[in-house]
Length: 289
Length: 294
Image 1: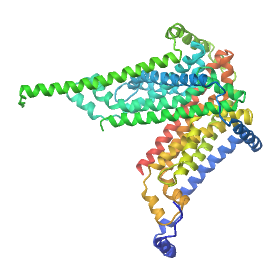
Image 2: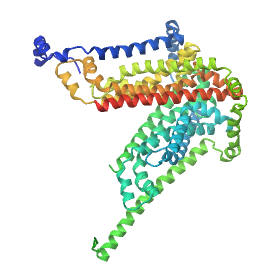
Image 3: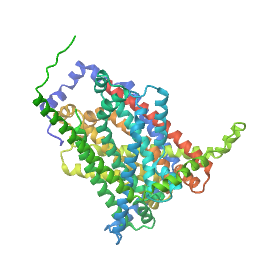
Image 4: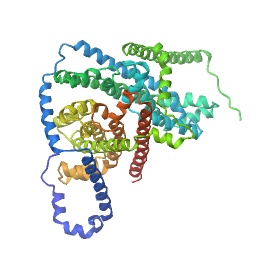
């Protein structure tokens, strides 16, 4: 998209600008009300940002000083090295993947039946639907680290608590997404089942489930991918995985090993991204159009 | 009205039935194989994550007991005083909550601006140069993949404790996440206005301003609002690593077994997040609905 020599059309239009202005006055008239609305919104956004900066102690001096130190850290990161603990890190990474897989699949299995209770086209009772919806919202609004802290109190430190934490917070998120997917499913297959004499359960089993299953599976894959990222930090509160080493090494400024761990995470997530993208396309493609 | 259906010749019927049951059996076998593979992976993952179902069953009453413990003592006879005692630190907590929301706001805004500037460089339909696109995409990927808490951990050491660190960490992660979504929106635009502007000799900036931005702005705003909601949740735990917000207070309460404080702060956070969730969902439907009608 380089700048080209102006075209004859542009030159003609520029030469006849006054004429154009006279012939099409509406196009050239500034829209004051619209402009005022845009400026007003912008002013509110900027004002709020300034208030936030003052309140949160933003200071240019600290930022410059910090950037200088960040530069030093970046220098210390080179070259990345495992420091002879490759086996340990690989095990921790495997643990992280196991936490993510276990958490996502458990959440999906639990959320699948419950999501039907929150869908308008399955459950008529608005109170039940509302109740299930709000419970999803409440469960979802608690961050995964907080869930981890709670589960550590129950099953003790370690990856099991991490898997439970991810299962909990995903149960809410997946439940909401599942119920939305169920509500937007095509009605024709369900009407066909009803027309041939099927009851309500038949309608859900043979009309609804086959239609939504590929969509749900692709959402689960997407969540597995994003959970691999969350599972890397869950070790910060002691719930297993690679996060434990990451926290510890950052605290003692072993920057070479930190860089190595971050690279390991980047590569793993990129690989999972690739595989799950393929799988997602295969699943969605296999579904009847 | 009766309909008479011609019966198939018996040998034809039997071949067709056999083919049908063969196809069904093959599909069943495939499903079974997938289910077995997933179950095996599940068990393997369970072994790696040290799942102990028996401990879980033994300790599950700990969970209910814990919930029971963090419940405040509320008596009907003395309700106002009990609530006041439960929320003894309300002014302080509300201040911290406001700080958390401002952190999320500023982080979303700064990250959103960075994402806005970078997303056009990462879009295949606007930038012909493969190198620029590759660099922009990889940069966004790194920002997105490294969790914000890890950024916060490093920044706390570099910049010192405080909410500013949380904002910077959230902003970087947001730039990565939004940059990807934004560039996907840009890649799906109607190319006719772009071609029109290119035809009149406009450069990249003018093309983006007059042909791309009007098409994508409502989608961008909707994604930014979605991200704001996610960031409020994320800002709530920034305090775990000393990066400001209500998280620190919560961590102290949980680690020191100040049971009623845990439930009080948790309830405040849940209420805030749910409210923001519902409000932004309204706004987003409004934004996207207006686009659909236009």
